[in-house]
Image (cartoon, rainbow, N blue to C red; front, top):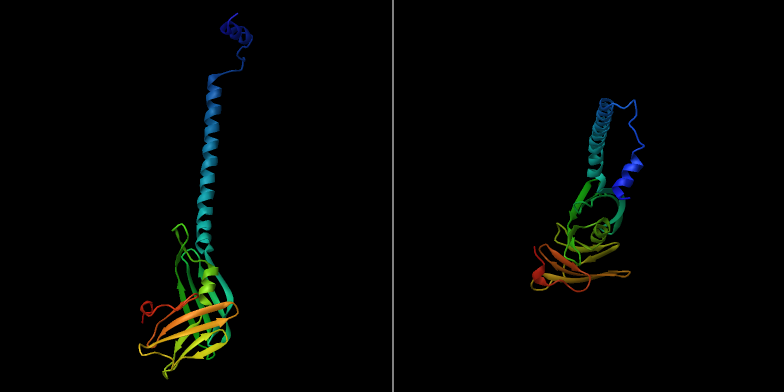
Length: 199
C-alpha cells in the first residue's frame, strides 16, 4: 500500500458536519478580524496617550537637581546643583553673605578610549566644580581659593605677568598657571604652559 492509499484510507471516515456552512465560517472570520482591529486601535490609542506622558517624563529624566556644599572664598556654602546629563551641562546657584543670588554654569563632552564622545556625567561635573578658583578683586589684589585655603598672589607674578601656584589638600594637588590680567590653567600633574593660558 502506498502513502497515497494510506492517506485516503485514514481520512475516508471523516465527513463534513451537517451544521457546516461556508457562510457561517466566513462571518466568524470577519467578526474575528473586526475584534482584532478594535483591540489594535485601542492599543494604539493607549500607547499614543501614554507615549506623550512618557516623552514628557523622559525629557526631564536626564536632569538631576540636588543640594550640595561648595566652597566660596574659604567658606562652605549650600548650593543647588542642576545637572542635565543628556547634554552634559550644569548650573550651581547659591546665596552670598550679602543675600545676593549667584549662579555659575558649565559642562562639556568627554571622549572615551574608543574615541566616542559623550556628555559629562554628574560625578565628572562634581570633580570639575571642586577645583581651586582665582579671584580678581577691584582693589587690584588677586587670590587663589581652595576649600578653606586663601592664597594672596598679588605680588607673585613674573615679568611676563604669570604666576605659578601649587595648591594641595589631602591627596589632591593642583598646579596652576595664572595670568595677571585674567585667565588661568589648572592641571593635576604639571603646571600648564604659558601659551595654553589665555586671557
